[in-house]
Length: 167
Length: 215
Image (cartoon, rainbow over all chains, first blue to last red; front, side, top):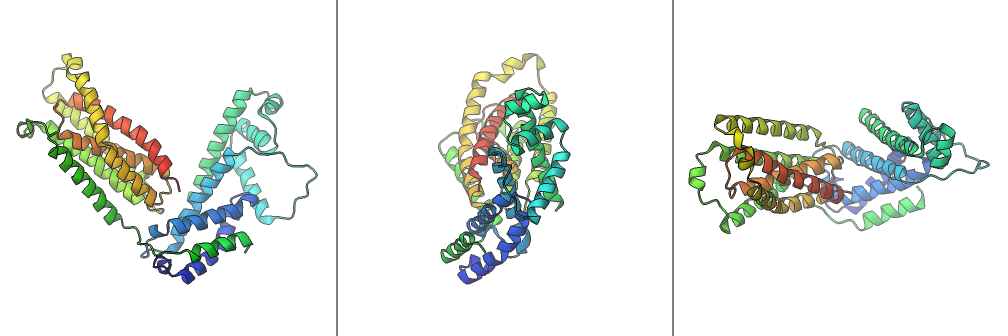
């Protein structure tokens, strides 16, 4: 990276090629499979735009990890903001070990929420129910469903951040 | 490697330009130069209070200067450090809030030395107070712009905390410069109107700097 800061394009290319598999593994454990490649590219762009913030006197790994973690949280926020669509029940899912690990991590985090929050998130965000349908199923009012989703997702983001700090 | 990412890597390395690594000391020097220039222009325009020699005997003048200078300096230091992706502003913010508590406590002690609590409304002098708020908020603008440039150039990973530290610093900075013109040495007046002025800059500044610092 120090060479890249001085304009050495070959060293820079070698660096980006070397960090890409690490980034794929990093996000593969933390994001839905469909979001991994986009986030890897986000980080590559961030490395490029912010390469002057790297201090050559310090190791490169923690700097890269800090940027990756920042982009991961950014992506989680973006995922939270986007509406989900129900999946086709007949769709076949390929064997995907990393996706399964990410899914099981998500289920574990969901299990740590209040039951009313976890149910609201599961129905609306994962199973594609509308808030009205979720309200009928759970007996919660529509506004309470919305509040539970909002608070639950906020709590999930905190837990994810705490997990990242533990990493 | 899938094609899209490989193309991106090719493009980024092909367009590579040399960059000068960021230096916190250089950033601090630039902010200091901006502060000195603003004070010089402000005083050069004749805004210094006319009774400054007499005011320098009052403990409240030094309390104002030290308090606002500490907030501005601490906030700027926290902002410069937190523009590094590896550093968090949280510890620095805790120090800033502790300083603010000490500032209020020391102001109360100065006030208790010789004040008439029966004339609170008169002492607040709201017409002058609102003018003070307006002036110190305008004087915060150069600092806020400097902080925005610093944050755009940096890579803060805790944008909420860093934007708060930068906004507090800009608020303290504006109030610090205003101390040279402020006609009041009443600790109650200072505590109330400086808090209002700083709170406005902090709230607005944090919202804008949070947006500006996105990367």
